[in-house]
Length: 319
Image (cartoon, rainbow, N blue to C red; front, side, top):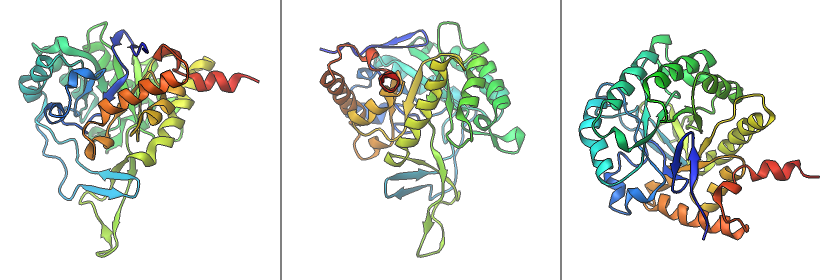
C-alpha cells in the first residue's frame, strides 16, 4: 500500500489527483461515472461575478494531439454557483478547489467575498485564482503575463480568503519568464501555484481557408502541451530549490492521460496533478489516473507519494 496523501499549503488531501477547471463542469456530469469524493479535490469551472454566455460558436476544434477551446468562461455567475453547485458538491463529500476569475482585479475580490459567505463554504479546501484570463480594464492584457497585474490580483484574493485556506495562482505558459510571474504571485501572498493553463493557438479550416473557431484564437490543451507543463514546473520548482523564489506547493496540469504522465509532473516537483482534456473521451480518466499513479509510485519502490515529489531534481544533482 502507498500513502497517497499530499499537503497543499495547509490543506491535506487523501490523494493528489484533481480535475482541471473547465473540463468537468461542476461535478454532476462526472459523478455519473465515479464518486467525485474519491478525488483529492474537485476543481470547479472558473466562476465569475456575473452570468456569462461565453464566446460564439464554433468554439472547440480538435488538433492531432489535443484540442483548442474558445469557451470564454461561460457560467451562471457566483450567486448561482453558491446556490446550486457548491451545496451539491458539499453533499457528495467532495473537497472543492474553486476556480475564480474577474474582468478586473477588484472583481476577483467580489467573487471571493460572495464565495466565502456561502453556507457551503466548509467544503472548500482552496481557491484557484485564474489569473490567466484577460484584464479588461487594461486593454485585455492577461493578468498572468505581467508581474504587477499578477501581484495585484493575488493580494486582493488572499485578503478575502480566510487564513488556513490556501490560494493558488494559475499561471499561463505564454510568457517569456514564468519564474518571474511565479515569484510575483508568491510574494503577493499565494500559497501555491497551478501550472499550466492552455497555450494560445489557432486552427485553420483548410476547406474554407479561415480560422475554424468563431473567436479565432483558442486555448490548446491535451497531450501536446504536457512537455511544456513539465518544463514550466521544472523551472519554477528549480528556482524554489535554489532559493531564488519563495518555496510553495505546485499543482501540475497539462496533457495528463495516464499515471505515467502524472508521474512526470510529480517527479519535477508537482505535489498534485489535475486531469482535464482526457475526460472528454474518457470520463473516468481522473479516477483511473489515480489508480495508475499509485501503481507507478509503488513500482519505483516508494511507500509514500510525498517522497516522489521533485525526485528528478535530486537525481539530476547526483554525479
